[in-house]
Image 1 (tube, rainbow, N blue to C red):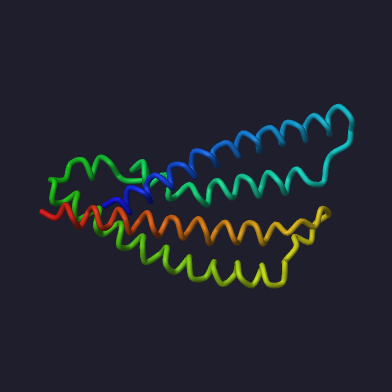
Image 2: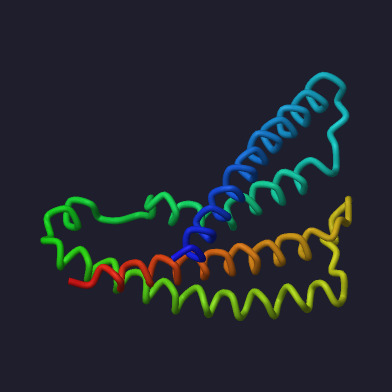
Length: 161
């Protein structure tokens, strides 16, 4: 069980640190508005930076939400079910989620690798390697989400009634 506790802890730590990137993103957006409004000198890098920071946070947010048991659920139906019905719902949701995440992980890993190998650039004015960063973050975030889902699946199966 210590491996599953470690995965939970790692997901929480990553989520707690990455949450600060939302604040950085908001600060950069304020900077952009200030530069454009006061000096009439908009930047070419803030939009791409905030997009990259926010996307990274969202991509790792799934695993964090699972550690907190805060994923979307139709609670009025779930809460009305008996204990066994909740267990079945949890099991089905985790298995289906795992199948989906494995597919996303496979395809995002291939895209990230291709993007890294050609060092893909954004093609915008700043021409930053944003595709490399976002595709790699998608793969890593999905990988963490897969590990988190497997950990929760093992716990749910262990609670079998």
